[in-house]
Image (cartoon, rainbow, N blue to C red; front, side, top):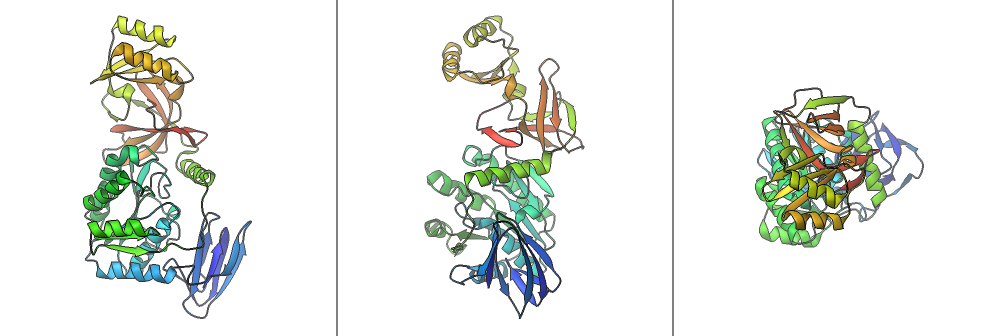
Length: 414
């Protein structure tokens, strides 16, 4: 067994080589990204040709360091013991190897000729779809990195942090599992995020397992999480250790990968104008609130903010206020508005509309787009998107992109 840290290109010149449960034979070629490392095991006398890139490395791998055999044993046991259709959820902390295990499970199912689906529910470090989306792929060949797959269906969660949107993340992941089963998947692998610490995280993961009617859970690299889930779901949870040698991603690496995936789905897309009347709109304070034309309230708002307010809306228990500004108002100004209006107050600024990530819905699936312009007079919106089909609704997220980087998040932007 050897270990290759990318970037690298490999060609099998003779024999059979196993990588993440996939079996490459003489003449097969594959690549390893600079953000990935894999162990290669010869299943017979084998030769490989390796082209190494900058910073890459090839070295002998100790089986104690590389749990490839253990992973295959666990994956094969889960798949062989599970009645089809089989739903398998992969859990563990950040950098534990969840994405690699999800790919390995897909490969081991394909070895058996089982139609397979992979659902990427890691909205912060999404690989199959853009960040903020839960995505479904139906691989029909070997997979080494989920980013190599193309989504056949996506749902827009609208955040790269699972905690604030836990309920939405559960329901949309459930939607994709049902869709995968309808498409004939015999094995459905669900890759999850690394939010596993704290009681809220544990309850979220337990809710996910229950909601999906999961057949098996594989926990990577966290014995405490394994023991806890094993107590809740005895007989359904297995443990697999993480590789001792692996590439750890810095926060900058993670941001770079997110930016690359935003670009993959959005860069160069044409602009599409949409009439908002008659569309289902979710996640928007501006488009979901009821216009509130009270001149006294408008005068108070403009006096406190010192800026024109082209729109004031009302929703149960609060107000949605738009101010003409290129930058957000001060927190002290917001507190003054809340005190004066005696309710929940959301303040939007017109300079914050551009760049907001949005999902365009055809009634079932969501497609990514970026807000280019909002016309408050006509209530029309321009969105940069590759989607050309019918639009029945818009889902606004809490992600705003500047040069395809999520420079700000959490707050309501539109």
